[in-house]
Image 1 (cartoon, one colour):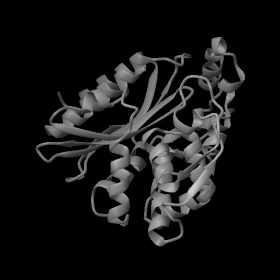
Image 2 (image 1 turned 90 degrees about the vertical axis):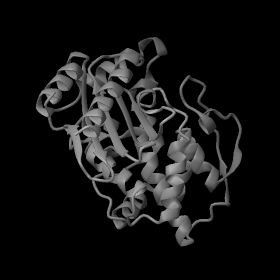
Image 3 (image 1 turned 90 degrees about the horizontal axis):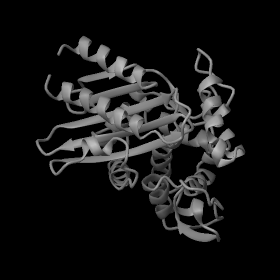
Length: 300
């Protein structure tokens, strides 16, 4: 199938399922790539934890932070399903900066992430990223600000109302009445920006080698593997990634390393028009489209 025909078919499949997305797959060795709206900007939800990890580790490398320093972390106090790690703790705990990195990145622990943001605020994370030549990802706020969204104001039985608002309250210019979904106010980025970030982590770049190696390890240890991982993990491949989820947004960015030496960066950022929190079909379709793009690129 020609690339143009494949793109039309994949776009139609996404639209029929009520999904719109920014997809990009790149061969990290050759630079060849294929994608769907790769420059479309989205609020990035928990994907922000990858730039946060890079900035924190870069500051440790410079001697500005000590990875062994223990931080007193207040419990998240969250008892509803979903959040992991310290976000569900009921009592204060002392956690080393190095371990907060693991909790924040590999477990997507929001409380751990905000403990790291307290050490390196959003503006400084952006400054570190820009200093490394990584642009296109904007960090504006902490995770706590991210989760203070309408879904928290509804009873669980009425959560679909928050998703309906998320779907209906946007503007053609990617603005939104919900600040966390407005690309001019939220942490934001595109599939292309994240592929550039993944390339900088997996190939020689301005990122220190030890910093890049640690972030790759944290992404390899990601425990949230229900989205793209089923289509990219096998005995002959390794999948390292980070997910992001907020209201009708479902994202994942990662790298698949094949036993034959091929390495592909994969970035998928999507929004759904279906007002439902649980959408396993959307998760599966995201992976199906991303795999089709990877397959096309692998055999070009």
